[in-house]
Image (cartoon, rainbow, N blue to C red; front, side):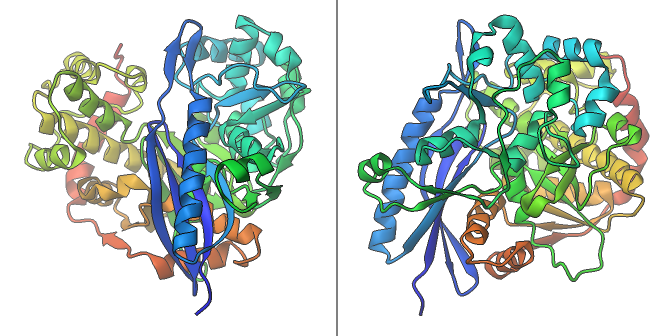
Length: 502
């Protein structure tokens, strides 16, 4: 039997991070969690920041432990790669130094900066140049905010590196931008995949820090000698995966390329991202008005999708209970939701106040009061309101996707940690009328590791990557059981989403 090949996937989310050692042998993948750590932004006097140096310490610890695990289990370590959430970045100076801590995307300064960009150029000009959904935290607007607040870092920066780019730089000593993460910035031309420098200049932003963009699967080179020595690790390669976590997750969607079914994906986690994988971008007035985005994927695919305010809602409900001294895990909250009355209270997941942290119970109560609905009073009622409303949001998004593509969707693949919530999976099948196929829940780490394998020549292409996923993980199917119930409430949901709520 051949020696298993090992790929280290560092998977960082907006709450926590993990080191996963993935082993590939006989076209099957196994995942081994090496370490897990908190990854939370912190408020400082000048804003909301990521503790990137602390994160770097955790990644070195993960590499050290992964190398030890590989030695003990006769695994041939090949490479490492990092994926994170989108948009956030740091600036690198002439001497290779980080010019301040990266801002976190929920920083309060971003919404006014987005409005300033709209006032300067207009939404159509920005969307036509980038094909990206308008979110106040997009990197383009973060740059506008940073220039207005204090421009010296931007003016003196040699590189603009997104969060995974920074960590790849720390590992390899080579600064580089990867395509999938760069595309989240609203600064990349969706057709060419190159920087939209004309747009940047029209907003009076400098562009000297925009350097060549590399595709997922590119090799930066070995880890530095210092990192290898400190982590007691051989000089393995740094192979950049789809370093936007959603790109890695979608790469691991276990679809069979020979299937004739029309499929869509839902990457379910803190955020929900629903869309289709395309060969060419869809940049139209209709796509802009429906808030769809054209992000880059593995093998230069287009991730045509919409961001939806996912399980963040339930996370915040749980966080509020923790702050009050009541500790519920997600299973307990979901079990409580199962026992509650259906459709008692429906919310709009995209309601702006829900996007900011803290006081979610009160925000939901305020929404219910202003829309003439009963206030959720129990953990189950709060959780059910969030889950049912997400299912309606998925239904609405899928219908818009079908209109924009001009075809019906038969199958919805749910990947990511949100797929563990069986209640939401069944609600989604009922709300959309689709067959829902769930798995793998560890899609991001899987796609990260297997894209490294493509980069190293151990896997041929995306089609073979997905075959390995099908070989390696059990999938679960949910079929619509009560779609009529959601049909009957659809107009109510639409009216609530259009209600004038503060």
